[in-house]
Image (cartoon, one colour):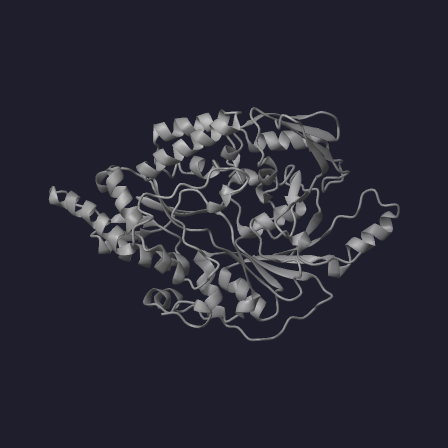
Length: 501
């Protein structure tokens, strides 16, 4: 049963949102000429670095504002300039040459191509914990050609390289110093961001004065989901960034108008990865039974957003563009729900019929309202075929672990690499060999064939239970004219409003 706006009213919902009511009042936004106030979900650390691993939503927003990469995303999710104001790609697709704009580090020293090359090399170094390190296997060299020109040379063409370089985690940070397009100043628990004055301005004093205009500034706060929504409801924030499926129930409890919600239709991976292949999970047949048992439409509908869609393939459907192969539909896709569940139950009954037990599966999901709702539906579907389960935290030892990641680029092989032979996935050597061959293949036609073969092997191996597309959401007041839904879930702070000239 669903209510207005299709937000579910199931028992799982009620249990998850119990006690989430926020101390809110409708105050109306104020300070239209003052700084734009943004509440980002997650911790805010002015010294955050991409080298430390995954960034919180607040830290990603901060880095993207103060230390953009060579290129960036605009408010529509399209490639835009960054530290590089122009670039060229050689005809063989293997060399990307970037010309840097005039820029200074926050200590006043000029940004050089050698600085940038060293920073990028450190991100991809073997000891780095950078979250995108494994998504750059094609890079041969990163070098400064002149003081203002940098070259990234690839072993094989990578048409989606720009999309990777535009990610906030590719911010160019030099020992904690950024270059822009905004500069940061700590004010209490928040950070005040203002535009970096044009270093080439004819009148430096006028440029500095314009940059200090309060209407050009952004006050960024990192906080909890309920805290962010409370700030918005009470008029202390013009927008909320960083929402995921796990925190959506807080939005429901806040009673903020549905028209303020911005949902990004992003491709990626959202599902349960098998962490170990032991006991009941040791056979492809049993893992496939769990894949078939999930009633995806029912699960997604429980969250009440028409923008959130079920997904049954290992690769996101949006990768079918640009001549790439369409995602491989699973063998069970043409069966109705009752047939799939019956097939799954037969596999479980066969296992038990041989006198073997099934220990409760440990399923790691976020310890949040959304995580508890997700587990409630998944565990009920597993129980319906005779498989017990229990919820554990994401940091705990587990048999299945949630992957919730937006695709960083449009490379069709990204999802297969992500699901094969990682720390939190199973490893099929046949599939991995095909993935490695496809990654290194300069022939686009052969690469597509190898990709499809690798996908077919992984589909039979069943290392992952796809559930849906990733869910990313924000909240925007009317003041945030630049915060629009886009296919990258990128909402750079310097594009949220039209800044004064």
